[in-house]
Image (cartoon, rainbow, N blue to C red; front, side):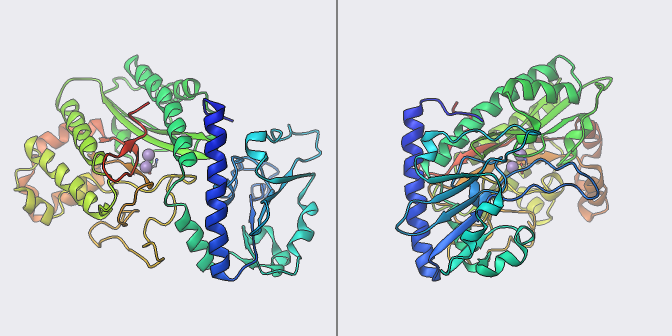
Length: 440
Ligand code: GLY
Ligand code: MN
Ligand code: MN
């Protein structure tokens, strides 16, 4: 498990984090009419017809309190007026290593009871008090009858609570960004030396000191045309005959919090390299606008305008900017959203809801946009505009009436480079946003 530097700083941030969550949760429970909240960390299940388990990761509502993303079957009880109580499961088992012993910097804020298995805390479910329980119904069966399991209204408010981060959460993401950037540096060097996708992936992990199982998401490591596959999931063992381009979308974890970073590189100084520089300038402009009060939908529209300008300036499309946007040409080249909330979950919760819980669906022309809110200070968002040459989307564009306005020869020369995405993690502030990825 990663440690942040400067333990005194860590201890006071975490103390403040727990105090903030306790305070907010008490108010939510009072409003919803509950006396206590139980958060389950989740259970590890074997694969179907197998005795092997998928890598375990604790439920996000539990990890939002406790830096224990790998601890299965624990239960946290929050009761207004008392210290939170943690049943920490440490199995009595010689097949596996036990989880790390509680560290005082976090454990001092809880009444910790170490137990061998979940049977030890099951009687606590039966206390005759109004209880909300957050967990997977499959893990509780009839035991869940003693509590309200995942009441939607409370769940929505708990999600909302996670949209404005405490300083502890922000520092965890800053550290996750530092770790990930060490990996990105090594990955760029491996690409420059002609490495395969698998070799680059391994160079990333080694430099970041990270296991693949605890990454916040499966790294995307693509060379050449693979840069155009938005969630490319494989890694070729051998290098291609010629590496033209490289896109890596890879993160890191610190105490359960994610970094989510993308970089794109060109092996030559041609048009693709120019496009990367222009996309980087656009991305930085947009990252500088992650300010409280701005609509993320408007920022997404600005990203499309920026892509339209790049398409026009590079001669790929000769239409006027407004006409290009009207005809939705940019959606061929940027088919995903500008970004999303980031936190315990890579695609963190409540991105398409107003603070009062009412739905905020994305505009019909941008259905993939995950974040549709007005930004608030303390939100953490990704800023990840892209410009891709995706054969299936280009084929659709070719059929449209505006096809004649495109320079298809130029596009054909760019298809072998795949595409570009540049992604940073940014804390929204009233004036100058705090870019966690570029500030070390
Ligand atoms: N790494 C997934 C994403 O950027 O949303
Ligand atoms: Mn990403
Ligand atoms: Mn992302």
